[in-house]
Length: 83
Image (cartoon, rainbow, N blue to C red):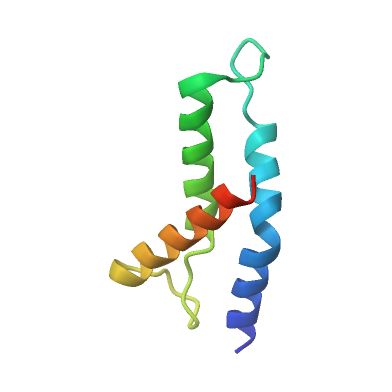
């Protein structure tokens, strides 16, 4: 039960922090802010990686199959909405 609460809290509280973190890292190799397709690709990859870290079941094991896909879809949608 504690794991479920921890995962939900991470998803709810981490959504806006995740978006801020991804935006803060959107700097190209020359130190300039990314724009256009590079920014879009970077944000998509960053959100996917952040959501992948939270894809853990109640028993502490990694999610797989349909559960993993559903978690990723929901998490990425929440991260995109919290821009």
